Length: 241
Image 1 (cartoon, rainbow, N blue to C red):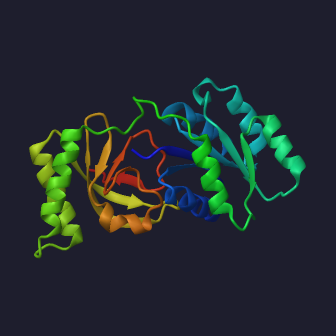
Image 2 (image 1 turned 180 degrees about the horizontal axis):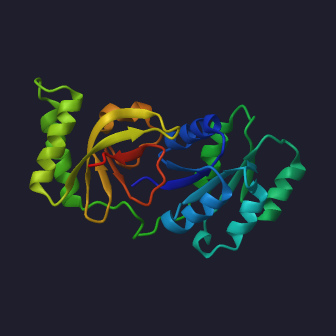
């Protein structure tokens, strides 16, 4: 599984840009848009790193860093603050508040600097982190995905639908129909099918079709595996029945 990085950023353009930097180094950026939501998600998803904007709608990144320093669920998890200041005093204030690092969003080499900082400060992944998938189920998904990938009579959407139906028939996974939205709430695919395990984990074998439009696909290679507790920039919205 990819390590989850909680990205706390109210500006969607900045969130997408920073999220792509994090995804490029093999991390999964999960989005919170304010400090209150960030604190709630730290307690529910156990991120390996927190990257937060200096400016938040419900306070400053400095305040969030100070709150996280006192939060038991964030013990051992580094916070990296991002802002527009290049003043060394700002970096000192950030570290005094509890941040491990402060980087300016205007750095020309921000992607490289962020990659270096993120990889140095990643917390070890908990063995009971959410979103795990049984290796046997994963093997079935991969075998069937390869078989359907070569079917000349199905388009990509058709392959996905048949694959979901086949997997539902040979496992205890439930087939679900709905839509996938991006983190702006815009449809990535209005008619989509995926699988859901009994513990509410979402399993989507359609990554080859969707990944160019999704930032940092979570899970195993070409199969998305997502805990129901995970804040998604790709939101799975089940069709009402």
